[in-house]
Length: 348
Length: 70
Image (cartoon, rainbow over all chains, first blue to last red; front, side):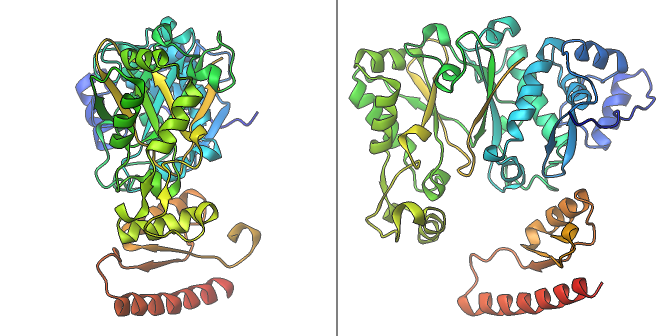
C-alpha cells in the first residue's frame, strides 16, 4: 500500500458565502457552490471506509495528483455526498485510473468526454440511487452528488481544470454529473455487473468515457425493427466510434427491453445485430476522418476504401447496454470517447 | 526518458502548449523542451504544412542538442 502526506488544512471564516468565494477564486469548485469540507465532515465521511486515510488509491492524470482516501473524501464532502457514498468513489477512482480507461485522453481531449458512473447490486437500493424515472436527470441526491464528486476528484486531484489541462472545446452538461443505477428489477436479462464477471449480490461501479446522450424515441413493437431504427440512429459520420473502433453504450428503457426479450433475443444476439446494423460505408465519413480511421484501424481493415463497411466497434462484444429508466418508449444512446474501455470495480 | 538520462522532448500545437508545460511540471520536469507548431492544421495548404514541418524539425534539432548538452 502506497501512502501520501495528509491534505493541507486552512482556517476560514465560519461564513458560507466567504468560503464559496474563496473556492471560486481558487478554482476548487465546478462552478456551483460547495459544502465546506471541514475536518468534522471529512472525518464523518472517512468513518464509512476501513481504508486508511493516507492510502493512495490512484495517481490521476493529467496533473498526476495522488488520490488518497482522504482527498477523495474531501471532494465527496464538497459535492454534498452522504458519507456512505465514499466506498463508491474510492472504487470509481481506482477504476478511472486503469490504463484501458485512458483517463489522460478523456481529461485532456478536445472531445466532450464525461465520466458516467453506472451502479449495480445492493448498493443501488442502499444509497437510494435512481435507476427508474428520470434516472439520468435531476432530482436524486445520490445520483447528483456521486457524479459531481467524481468530477471534483478529477479536477482537484487530477488537475483537469477547464482551459488548462482539460482541453474540451465545449464540454457537455454531463461533466457536472452523470450517474445512475441499472434497473435490475425490470431487466429481462442478467445485470451488467454479472455480465462483467461479478456475483449477483456484489455491488459494483462501472465507469464509462461518455460523449453525451441521444434520445432514441420509438414506438416500434417489433424487436427487429426496434434494433434497426436504433442502429440507424447510432450510425453517424462524425462519430468517434467509427474512427477508432469504439465502445458504444445503450440504456434500454424497460419497455424496449421487454420487446427485445419477447422477440427471443439474448444480450449476445442484440450485440451481434446492432454490430451488423450499424456498419457504415467509409464514404459517409469525411476524407479526413477516413484518414484517421486508417491510422487507427489498419490492423482490422488494411486499406480503407470508400466502400469499406466500417463497424462501430471492433467486436460485437464491445457494444454494452443496461436497462434503466421508467415507463416510456425512450432508450438512450451513449456514444463513447472512442479510445477508452469501461472499467468495473466492486465496491467494498 | 529524461528520468533515464536520455535527451527527450515533446511536440504539440499551440492549443496544447499550456497542457504540455503543465504536465511536464506535474511530472517534475518543468524544463522539458517542447517544440510548438501553430494550431490548427486543417485549413492549411500542403506547402504551408511542409514549411511548418521543416521549421519544427529545425526546432526539434536545436532543442535536442541543447537538452543533450546539459
